[in-house]
Length: 238
Ligand SMILES: O=C(O)c1cc(=O)[nH]c(=O)n1[C@@H]1O[C@H](COP(=O)(O)O)[C@@H](O)[C@H]1O
Image 1 (cartoon, protein in one colour):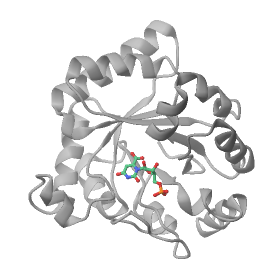
Image 2 (cartoon, rainbow, N blue to C red):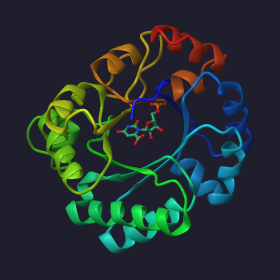
Image 3 (cartoon, rainbow, N blue to C red):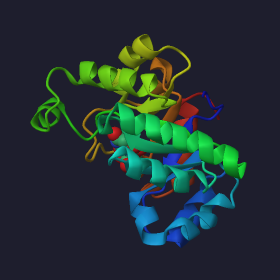
């Protein structure tokens, strides 16, 4: 998927009013909205309507990771929400990824709703090489991300989440039709915070990212609309 505007803004808040206010401010400046565990555990499916009203593609980032039966059941519920993108952890394994992808396909057909892109998170962008090794990923992060990307692709995922530093390796491994969703995006003028593997929006896009997930550089800016406009300008999209 290559959106005309690849920026999905991460609305990492628990408050529907704050999420809706940001969505209102950013409509026309971003390509989509993302909410994750923080928002969904606080507000449940009912909370999505506050932001679905803006008509932007919605990415619900739940990073599912459990046995195949449980993840498939959760994916059936997620699919009924009518969202564009959702996530699971690639390290849940081949059978789990396959069960989730099949559940999304079957549920979308059964209820005549949009089938979300099923996107597998590889190695979180908050982990550096040492932290990745500490949880058992031996070898270079780049190689581990590429390996997990291949596993995800072979088992029906539509794409993966990786940091900007692994985009080239994953493209070479998985080809042009595999969706690369890329957080760990930091404009040169923003704080890095807990992100360890990051590049600027233009660097990530030019290396081949399809979706740029950007949260705090926009959402915590004094003027979020101006921050989004600055990023669009850097992407040559304003
Ligand atoms: O799946 C994700 O979206 C994700 C995966 C990952 O490896 N790293 C990562 O930062 N994310 C998400 O991307 C967003 C990044 O937000 P900022 O760091 O504020 O730009 C957050 O909502 C994270 O949950």
